[in-house]
Image (tube, rainbow, N blue to C red; front, side):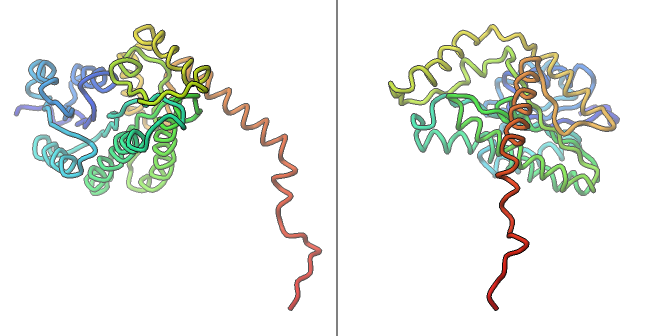
Length: 288
């Protein structure tokens, strides 16, 4: 396989559609090399046929650790390195907390959180030994601010963000960067074909999670965000000498997160006296 060995090697999960596909196309067009993964790699044939020297499709279900290890080994044997890991594979689960089943919750966590963790751990051994690399974890505005009807999805993304913050500190001494990507509404199939809706719908939540379902139906295909421009923004971060820990994508996400920060700051101020009045009294005496 003839390649440009000065180009970066990207390993992107969930390349069949959405952000993964958009990022894969932009990365290849700029001359980088790519391990494009999907549960059904045949869906990537057009992409790979267009860039036969710089793209390789690999089957990967991120919830299967054996497949993860095999995919990473394939990447290393094909291109010799992995410079950028993008944990993109994931999906949305729509339903109020009381409406979602145990199996729906666990499946959501297996993909959105444990899947990303599986791939990260597998790739880190290589990046750490080379003292370089960049990990992009695709979260969501919903990984920073909770939404009615998306509590479990929020939980998976909050978990991913917490792990990413700690990971960024752990791997910084090895020259590895971590960026949490927090998109708002983008014109992918996240709100449509890829969305899983809880099998149970409770009438009492019709004005809550039910309204969120209706909103998703209206939003699907009408989002203002352009996935190709999101991909360009992510590449800009990877090429930066001082990349951010968080990359917010979309004016809607920026507005929501700023609002959340203001709300938290106001609540901290309002309850400050109660928060700090929890220490032992300096005048307290203790029996000996």
